[in-house]
Length: 138
Image 1 (tube, one colour):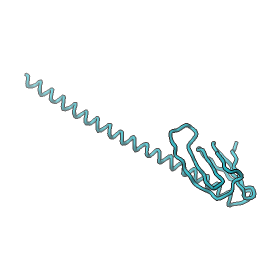
Image 2 (cartoon, rainbow, N blue to C red):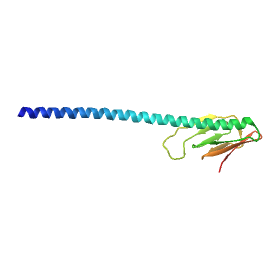
Image 3 (tube, helix red, strand yellow):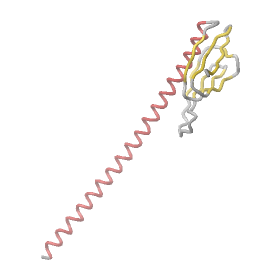
Image 4 (cartoon, rainbow, N blue to C red):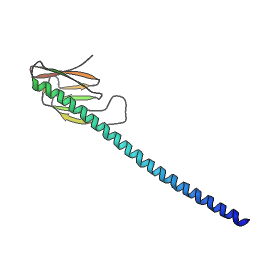
């Protein structure tokens, strides 16, 4: 009778050890998966910002190239700094998110102001005698 109790006790310890090892493997795999998910989300955000920056740059280039009286519009969800030197700095959304990725692209043209800081949804770009001006659409 004593022999049977020892065998049952040994099996219980082995099962607990196996469950512990499986749990440890599960935790490690979850950690790796979570890290990869964060990397993918950050890459997706960077690509979306780059697309927005290129879209704004193309809108400014198009208006500057087509000449006097031409107008275009663009839409963005991010904070934009458009400098007269031809740089566009696209920053974070203004929703208080944790990200701090900034994207920089450029355009050829002359602005009527030294720089624009834009936050919002839709903007128009107009060409007045070779000088670009940007205004928010209300």
